[in-house]
Amino acid sequence: MSSRETFLITGGAGFIGSHLVERLLAAGNGVIVMDDLSTGRIENIRSFLDHSSFEFIHCSIFERGTVEEYVRRSDGIFHLAAAVGVKNIVRHPVRSIETNIYGTQIVLNLANKYRKRILLTSTSEVYGKSEKVPFREGDDMLLGATHKPRWSYACSKAMDEFLALSFYRETALPVCIVRLFNTVGPRQVGEYGMVIPRFVEQALSGQSLTVYGDGNQVRCFIHVRDVVEVIYRLMQTKRAQGEIFNVGGREPITIYELARRVVDLTGSSSSIIKVPYEQVYGEDFEDIRVRVPDTSKLVEFLSFRPSYTLDDILREVIEDFRRRGQ
Image (cartoon, rainbow, N blue to C red):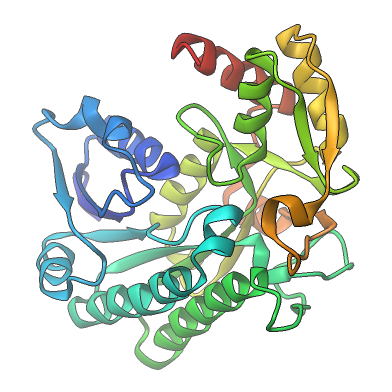
């Protein structure tokens, strides 16, 4: 591999994508961001627009001709373009499924045509309702009924994985898959259902923190810079090709306790209230009770451990909101 490469990031104006841009540019690489700005924001990448090694293409992942041009020009592809957030997925299920399946199919086909390395971002949602905790990459999936819209997202991302691994087995496409758990950090917004920015915004504005359901759901959170470091290093690791990796935090916490911690760290006088799921997502919503990753495979391949604690993450998000006047 050359010391300077050019990488295409689909969905690169999003929260994770914009941090990946920073990491790639800092390493001396060229970066092409492709985003339709449906959930990505130009503000996330504004500071890079005048960078000599950065290029932004405003287009849909379905514009095959344009996608092909930039796949051909790149040395590797980070495929981040996907439906974002539980609220978005529940409200726009058709668009979510089409984006995840057809968009990924286009990118994988083009990556295969031009023999480009590709890293595909999947999700912890594929584990579904499994109670075998912590989740390991080889575990079975346990998904809900098809009339529960949440599971359409998990199924669509699972199909992405099947397709990517089929390309690897059939054509030796150099593809790696990461299953991202709850990723948090500066620039993330709460409008699509992301819980930490929503709690922080509520606490800083003196509103009650709204915990959906009974608050006993368990999650692990990881800083976006840790995630970006992992996916950057995996792209450079040849033996990671054809593999799937959990990428997540190591401190399980209930959502109610998370709300209490945000109140404490912000010094807020906000109360914490519980809101039934059906008031937020509708009658057919079904949640995942426990989502905890086994990251031993990632440790084996990269000797990687998160460098940010949960309190580190919360303090940085709080400071980011205060800095932006929110």
